Length: 69
Image 1 (cartoon, rainbow, N blue to C red):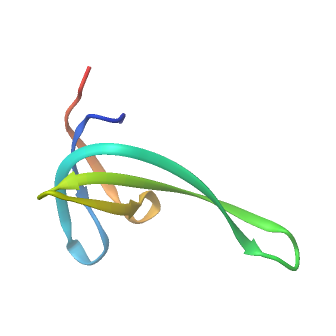
Image 2 (image 1 turned 30 degrees about the horizontal axis):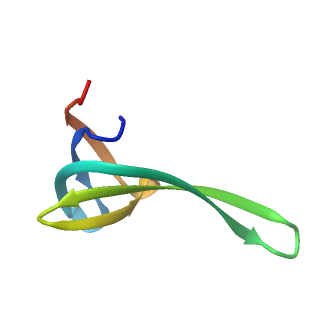
């Protein structure tokens, strides 16, 4: 999976998005300030229906429909 691929994503509560993957970003978030525990989350930016949807990869099932290679 890379930027430019056409993807079909099944998200929380059976929402389905079909579009072009325009960006993949990783963000480090603090899980516990007291113990200094961090968590890295990966976000997928998908262009569908003239909107960019930001989806957490952990909550998604991603299927690549057409690879841009």
